Length: 383
Image 1 (cartoon, rainbow, N blue to C red):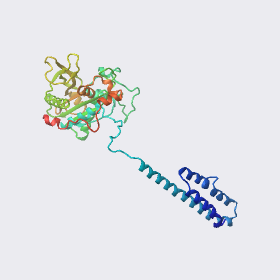
Image 2 (tube, helix red, strand yellow):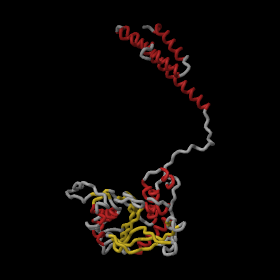
Image 3 (tube, rainbow, N blue to C red):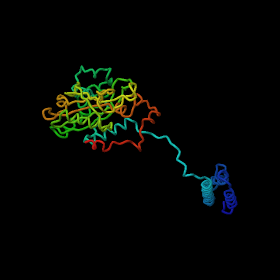
Image 4 (cartoon, one colour):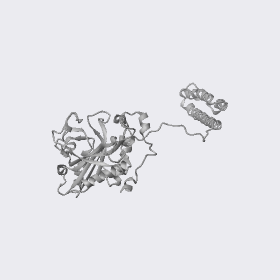
């Protein structure tokens, strides 16, 4: 087929493309020309019936026509789309003086906020943050902390045990696996790791925040909650260092210089001597008011004492099991519920709401990620 025979078809294709008055008509032109039943597609189908000599003469011209039409269709489509965009831009306007539409915003959970505040306070006091596994064996969770086999905390109704024994490691089977009931195993792991790095021991000053698990659930207890524990190991450490640390920490956290603490003798297997720490409070709004940490004397009229945390000097047996010589090293430890601190500071009355995932509660008690309260400099100002 000669070029002269293709010219009328090419002229018709150019006119069809040029006269299209929109993308729909242009698409119809493409189908009429290059579709399965299109005129140019029909020409391509004739190549199969030609002799090799005729095919060699006609194929380049037909393919050139097909390419010309495809290019013309593409250029025409681009021109139409550009014209449509220009028309849309000219017609649409945006009033930049109007406020931006409100969008749903996330917030920082009170537990996360308190975790940040604790880390900030203790960083000012020279503590580092230590972490450990939430799935522990009973040696780290109980035995290494001087808790005998008969201790009530080991009972099934207090601890979440895994049903199957853990596999042996290096030929030795670990203890029974469980969800840790406190972050104290982190203290043991930190002391053992310190000895690995420096035989004979070295000072330790850490806090261990994290999730812990106990079989309990009511308005002030949940099966999973958050705890932060502190540990200091050094030479010539005594109870006065513990009291100063707790006084400084709580005064900075509650942002009150008049906070009054009371230390009561108590018992914990992993500390000796052990003390419960109470903080003075007052009732707002009469006897039916909510408890608020207000400082002042807990013995004054209308005031009282609230148990807040447990603490004490690290038991010599715990030091020995962690590889430290109790004749050379002493230390203190303390632990407090992060969720309880959040409840006291930010006025919440039900611990279960922390984990309900109620968007209304989170919007009310949550913190903006861009405007979080900070305690920077608070500890230093109280020294």
